[in-house]
Length: 94
Image (tube, rainbow, N blue to C red; front, side):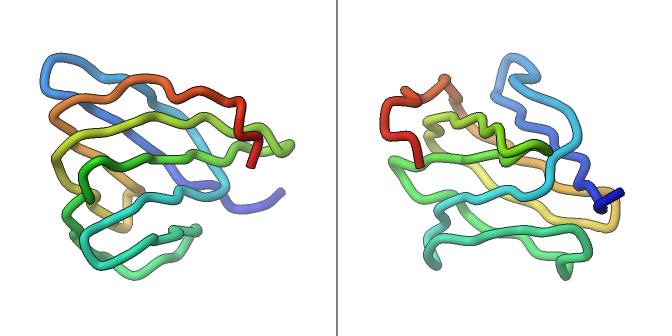
């Protein structure tokens, strides 16, 4: 079985999404960042406006429009702390 990342997407008031994923893609102030299992620890500031894409096993993907906040990668997984997070339209189908 492929390695998985534990992902938490948290907005100010609530946990928006939590689970296991194969990859997380987020746009930070440094550029777009893809995080796979085993990624080195880092802390990045989310770009505004931004989007976080969570790629799940089996090819499914969930996307959220985020405003403000940070992306943290640690040995435990990925945590996205956003001021707000709303489900993105999946119409683009990327």
